[in-house]
Image (cartoon, rainbow, N blue to C red; front, top):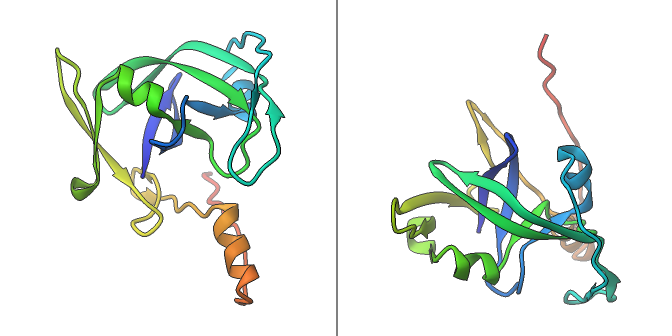
Amino acid sequence: MYVSLMIQGQQVAAMVDTGATHSFQAEWIVHWLDLKVDKHTSRIKAVNSQAQAVTGMAHSVKISMGDWEGKIDLVVVPLDDFDLILGSEFLICEKVIIMPHLGGLLATNEQKPYFVVGYNATTGGIDKGKKRVETLSALQVARGLKKGHLTYLAFLMEVES
Protein backbone atom coordinates (compact mmCIF):
# COMPACT_ATOMS: atom_id res chain seq x y z
CA MET A 1 0.00 0.00 0.00
CA TYR A 2 1.12 3.53 -0.74
CA VAL A 3 0.03 6.82 0.82
CA SER A 4 0.53 10.40 -0.20
CA LEU A 5 2.14 12.54 2.47
CA MET A 6 3.51 16.02 2.82
CA ILE A 7 7.04 16.85 3.97
CA GLN A 8 7.79 20.55 4.32
CA GLY A 9 4.89 21.43 2.03
CA GLN A 10 5.93 19.00 -0.73
CA GLN A 11 3.94 15.92 -1.72
CA VAL A 12 5.80 12.61 -1.54
CA ALA A 13 4.68 9.05 -2.26
CA ALA A 14 5.37 6.66 0.61
CA MET A 15 5.19 2.88 0.62
CA VAL A 16 3.79 1.35 3.82
CA ASP A 17 5.99 -1.64 4.64
CA THR A 18 5.21 -3.67 7.77
CA GLY A 19 8.36 -5.73 7.10
CA ALA A 20 10.69 -2.72 7.29
CA THR A 21 12.16 -2.09 10.73
CA HIS A 22 12.53 1.67 10.28
CA SER A 23 11.31 4.40 7.96
CA PHE A 24 13.60 5.20 5.06
CA GLN A 25 13.87 8.05 2.61
CA ALA A 26 15.76 8.38 -0.63
CA GLU A 27 18.87 10.56 -0.66
CA TRP A 28 17.46 12.86 -3.35
CA ILE A 29 14.64 13.96 -1.00
CA VAL A 30 17.20 15.28 1.49
CA HIS A 31 18.65 17.57 -1.17
CA TRP A 32 15.25 18.49 -2.65
CA LEU A 33 13.81 19.54 0.74
CA ASP A 34 17.11 20.70 2.27
CA LEU A 35 16.65 18.47 5.34
CA LYS A 36 19.19 18.41 8.16
CA VAL A 37 20.84 14.98 8.30
CA ASP A 38 23.08 13.66 11.06
CA LYS A 39 25.91 11.27 10.23
CA HIS A 40 25.18 7.60 10.75
CA THR A 41 27.67 4.71 10.72
CA SER A 42 25.22 1.83 10.26
CA ARG A 43 24.83 -0.38 7.22
CA ILE A 44 21.58 -1.67 5.75
CA LYS A 45 20.80 -4.92 3.95
CA ALA A 46 17.65 -5.24 1.89
CA VAL A 47 16.31 -8.40 0.31
CA ASN A 48 18.21 -9.39 -2.86
CA SER A 49 20.80 -6.63 -2.52
CA GLN A 50 24.26 -6.02 -1.13
CA ALA A 51 24.72 -4.41 2.29
CA GLN A 52 25.28 -0.68 1.90
CA ALA A 53 26.18 2.24 4.10
CA VAL A 54 23.45 4.42 5.57
CA THR A 55 23.89 8.02 4.45
CA GLY A 56 22.50 9.53 7.64
CA MET A 57 19.46 10.13 9.82
CA ALA A 58 16.92 12.94 9.58
CA HIS A 59 15.39 13.37 13.03
CA SER A 60 11.89 14.63 13.90
CA VAL A 61 10.86 15.40 10.32
CA LYS A 62 7.36 16.88 10.30
CA ILE A 63 5.00 14.99 8.01
CA SER A 64 1.28 15.18 7.36
CA MET A 65 -1.29 12.96 5.68
CA GLY A 66 -4.54 14.87 5.24
CA ASP A 67 -5.44 16.35 8.64
CA TRP A 68 -3.05 14.03 10.47
CA GLU A 69 0.33 15.47 11.48
CA GLY A 70 3.30 13.95 13.22
CA LYS A 71 7.07 13.74 13.39
CA ILE A 72 9.19 10.90 12.14
CA ASP A 73 12.83 9.83 12.14
CA LEU A 74 13.96 8.86 8.64
CA VAL A 75 17.01 6.78 7.78
CA VAL A 76 18.56 8.21 4.61
CA VAL A 77 19.62 5.50 2.19
CA PRO A 78 20.05 5.05 -1.55
CA LEU A 79 16.60 3.93 -2.70
CA ASP A 80 15.88 3.24 -6.34
CA ASP A 81 12.29 1.98 -6.33
CA PHE A 82 10.62 4.20 -3.72
CA ASP A 83 10.86 7.77 -2.43
CA LEU A 84 9.96 7.00 1.16
CA ILE A 85 9.17 3.85 3.13
CA LEU A 86 7.07 3.96 6.30
CA GLY A 87 8.24 1.04 8.46
CA SER A 88 7.19 -0.71 11.65
CA GLU A 89 8.83 1.85 13.95
CA PHE A 90 6.51 4.55 12.56
CA LEU A 91 3.46 2.27 12.59
CA ILE A 92 4.03 1.32 16.24
CA CYS A 93 4.96 4.78 17.55
CA GLU A 94 2.03 6.49 15.82
CA LYS A 95 -0.39 3.62 16.59
CA VAL A 96 -1.28 3.05 12.94
CA ILE A 97 -3.72 0.34 11.92
CA ILE A 98 -3.46 -0.84 8.31
CA MET A 99 -6.90 -1.47 6.84
CA PRO A 100 -6.45 -2.99 3.36
CA HIS A 101 -10.14 -3.91 3.12
CA LEU A 102 -10.94 -0.18 3.33
CA GLY A 103 -7.99 0.86 1.16
CA GLY A 104 -6.04 2.86 3.72
CA LEU A 105 -4.71 3.16 7.22
CA LEU A 106 -6.00 4.60 10.48
CA ALA A 107 -3.70 6.83 12.52
CA THR A 108 -5.17 6.39 16.01
CA ASN A 109 -4.00 9.62 17.60
CA GLU A 110 -5.78 10.03 20.95
CA GLN A 111 -6.79 13.62 20.19
CA LYS A 112 -7.95 13.06 16.61
CA PRO A 113 -7.97 9.65 14.90
CA TYR A 114 -7.64 10.04 11.14
CA PHE A 115 -8.20 7.66 8.21
CA VAL A 116 -5.64 8.03 5.41
CA VAL A 117 -6.69 6.80 1.98
CA GLY A 118 -4.02 4.67 0.35
CA TYR A 119 -3.49 3.32 -3.12
CA ASN A 120 -1.73 0.41 -4.79
CA ALA A 121 -0.30 -0.41 -8.19
CA THR A 122 -3.71 -1.54 -9.50
CA THR A 123 -5.65 1.52 -8.32
CA GLY A 124 -3.12 4.09 -9.52
CA GLY A 125 -1.01 6.84 -8.07
CA ILE A 126 -1.27 10.07 -6.19
CA ASP A 127 -4.23 12.24 -7.07
CA LYS A 128 -2.91 15.76 -7.60
CA GLY A 129 -6.03 17.81 -8.08
CA LYS A 130 -7.63 16.63 -11.32
CA LYS A 131 -4.40 15.04 -12.55
CA ARG A 132 -3.64 11.43 -11.67
CA VAL A 133 0.00 10.46 -11.34
CA GLU A 134 0.54 6.76 -11.97
CA THR A 135 3.48 4.96 -10.43
CA LEU A 136 5.50 2.22 -12.06
CA SER A 137 8.41 0.69 -10.20
CA ALA A 138 11.66 -0.42 -11.78
CA LEU A 139 10.84 -3.93 -10.50
CA GLN A 140 7.60 -3.98 -12.51
CA VAL A 141 9.48 -3.03 -15.69
CA ALA A 142 12.21 -5.60 -14.94
CA ARG A 143 9.61 -8.36 -14.44
CA GLY A 144 7.97 -7.54 -17.77
CA LEU A 145 11.31 -7.61 -19.56
CA LYS A 146 12.29 -10.86 -17.86
CA LYS A 147 9.06 -12.51 -19.03
CA GLY A 148 9.78 -11.37 -22.58
CA HIS A 149 6.94 -8.84 -22.72
CA LEU A 150 7.34 -6.10 -25.27
CA THR A 151 7.96 -3.09 -23.04
CA TYR A 152 7.76 0.60 -23.82
CA LEU A 153 8.59 3.22 -21.24
CA ALA A 154 7.56 6.79 -21.98
CA PHE A 155 7.23 9.91 -19.87
CA LEU A 156 4.83 12.71 -20.63
CA MET A 157 5.09 15.95 -18.70
CA GLU A 158 2.45 18.66 -18.85
CA VAL A 159 4.01 22.14 -18.86
CA GLU A 160 1.93 24.97 -17.44
CA SER A 161 2.19 28.23 -19.33
